[in-house]
Image (cartoon, rainbow, N blue to C red; front, side):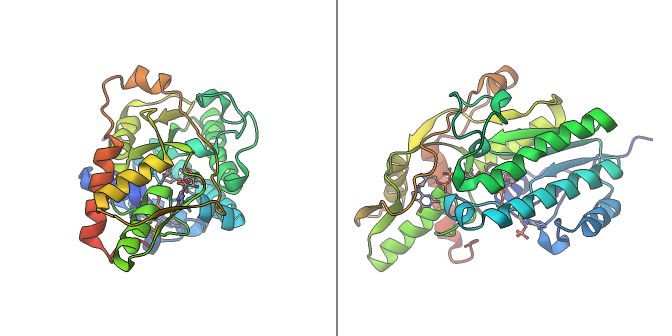
Length: 309
Ligand code: NAP
Ligand code: GFB
């Protein structure tokens, strides 16, 4: 008798994990660090033997923005490479039928043709600001295909662009730009101080709401079976300075916005080639950045101070 479907979500307490919870994915078990440290293989295997999942959405990772990545390059490399080796090996040993894991468009070569295309993933070194995370993440594609070749594992990899949304990591020093600026704007308004924005404000980014990535993770788990990874993005770019204006407007912040040029810009842009994605999902409607910022700011204000800092 076919085992009933059981989905194990590693990193289930994070940004995308909470989006999947809102989507009420049936037969899903959501893990957090409390269930076990996935950098430890024995703990990882024990979790897989206990739950015997048929499918895995592998989200667990040490994740952060340009600040966190630049400060903890070694930690980001070590923890992510160990988590990924352990989770994919435990999935193989317990006969998981399908596993999806996640890289990021920020791990592409710093100098490569635009728009970013899946085939160029390994064609050069990543941006210096996050090379530890980037190289660790690139090995997900290598390990998934090495396991497919030798053991026939159906392990696939998605490559989302910058994700944001409710229950993100809002740390002003280690979080990504959207959550960091939301918390910084909230505190600037509360304390009547300037809102300090890192860098020049000129870089461009593509942003995707976590709820959209949650939907696409479920879709890919059921329908995407190619060995090569797939970029998940609308391809719509927004400048940091326009993003700040949206956040300030949503927060009704009337104070001064000051650019802090002592902080890095990171990559100037990382535009995605959405050709492959549109071949599979031509009608998918991404949430606009305006709507997504409104939703995230509202969530932040309703939940502050019980937020991930
Ligand atoms: P997140 O909010 O930082 O959540 C990370 C999750 O991983 C948390 O549930 C955390 O558990 C868990 N975790 C971390 N270290 C662990 C360990 N040693 N053992 C067990 N669990 C551990 O991450 P996210 O933003 O949802 O990202 C999910 C995935 O998408 C990651 O693989 C990330 O690389 C990828 N991605 C993210 C973005 C983005 O902009 N956020 C963009 C592209 C790709 P605790 O809550 O208990 O700490
Ligand atoms: O989101 P972010 O930290 O990471 O930064 P990346 C995006 C841009 O926002 C940079 C600017 O140009 C920053 O200078 N920025 C302005 C800020 N103000 C702030 C602020 O207060 N906080 C932050 N964090 N940025 C990440 C990678 O690159 O992309 C990660 O480092 C991850 O590995 C993520 O994969 C998806 O977009 O530059």
